[in-house]
Length: 484
Ligand code: UDP
Image 1 (spheres, rainbow, N blue to C red):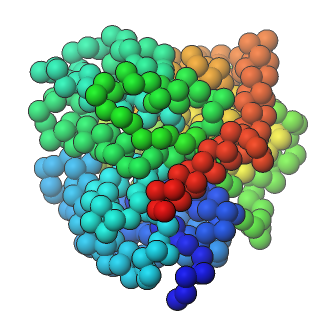
Image 2: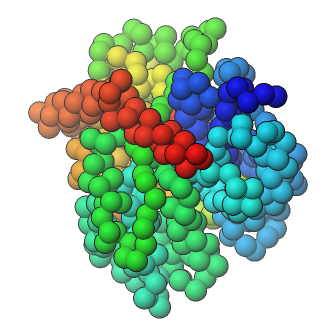
């Protein structure tokens, strides 16, 4: 080694598809700026077939310029038999990797070659490793600035309460930088009891997200300027100086894999899209893990059929239960004949296309034939649609998705809400009406126009001199000053 070698950035994305994907895009930004990048990977303890099996292998194979370093595996927790919440087991599991991460970071010599450690929002335990070694550590936030603003302010709001959020129901809560958020929208399942280990662990993670030297957020200034400004307000978290927040997005990939090259064989659904009129197809998909009950699948089918519109629908085998462990289940490929109403596929042949389990979502969204997107409001899906200028129908399931829904509908103006989710079932009539609203009506046309404007803004943010590019350069310069 010599001093003139390139500096290395170490990225630590944790496990999930929705986290490895955007971090791969971040890796490319560092590569473009002349850095070497190593992604430190852990063997995912959850191997559900429908979350894109072999995802990391595909990402690694299609991004040869990024070094992937797999940490020596640790036996996964026994999710099935433990009484602890799977989220807590997952966090304990991640903490065990600290030692392995430390050994890996120590192996990078001379230390000056190590530019920084950038960690995922759920890998805050790694801050301890960085502190021990004196390595500059930054957070990469794979959700939006609005959600980061809420979570940053939430511990202070809950600190004075003896009870959690449950009893507040839909009471709107005020936070700097975002529209009022109904208490029910704040990942309430994790916040029922402030004394509970689950709640305390969440709070700690949220606090530590801004305990690093800075936060790189996958968003762009014009999309979330209100939330981004909030972090600069001394009243955001009274008594605490927050680190800089850099909006460097949208970092979105192709097909969720971050692949640079075109796939050798064009997937069948894209070939089908090629034959559809421009902006005529509604895509329906619920992220890497989401699945719906059978009754709901039947309602969707009836609604799509009645709408008369073209559709591309990702259907999954329903989860077995409502248990928090449902995400860990290995689900088989769906049996379409059993799940869909009789004759549905024949009656919609030509104008509908059903995909089992997993679709090349980002490629579908950028296809000119795609005109609307029924989404669970996961942040990557949201950004992919915004970057493609596709208006959304918001169908939040869990995590921070209801907050995203509020931001998408009330703030960004790129989506309409499917209201039935509140009652636990979206009826065929609503599916039909909202699909038609977006694809056929005057309101839909306005929504499309706003989505097209957002797309243009997203492109501008990433150009030379654009806000996201400038924020990234500012980040690099801040790291440099710090190291000097
Ligand atoms: N995705 C995909 N095909 C699918 C489902 C999901 O390519 O059938 C990708 C999607 O494009 C996005 C990611 O998986 O990049 C899901 O991330 P998001 O944040 O939207 O949701 P999460 O999976 O974290 O709930």
